[in-house]
Length: 239
Image 1 (tube, rainbow, N blue to C red):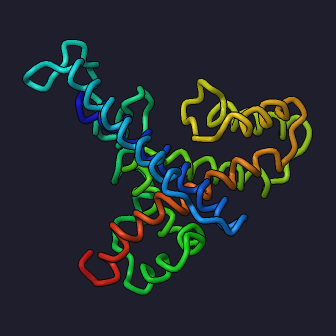
Image 2 (cartoon, one colour):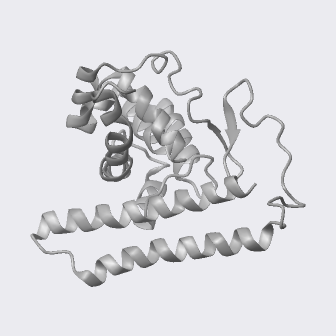
């Protein structure tokens, strides 16, 4: 129980910190400005406060032996279908589970790993790279970012129109954008409002800004950890 609760808070810490740093980097690139010490302090305070409340929450909801009287029963956790319960109550493919099982059965070659290290584009353009990156995102409770990015990509590739476009756009909205979405992604209120206003008369590019935002979060956050924590192992042949 504590592990699942901790996972929820850690995901929020990573997501908030990645979002702030991504915004800072874009601002610096656009204006040629230096990131001030005060702004960095705000980012670190965000992280510290989330950590503080995580420990406070766990301490107040768990007994001395590390369990809770109200711990939800879920005999299917890590079951045969490779689905586990996310701390917020939603289901996710568990790390190492159904994220391209066939593709991750064998390790990438050092040449493949070096290619993935060059750019996130090389990862996403390689089915095996995408499978390994999906596995990494699942471990960070952030697989929905890639799922949303792929859903929008497919929406534009299929070039739907009329009622079919409305149906597909509404499904993406309900699954990833709506406040009660099962796979809610981290986008700001402005983006969410613009998408909500366009949902009755959708266009294939209505999710573009949100897709770019999520792509930036993955590139500056999860991808950096992916190449640091995982890819280097395969390059050296120790994977």
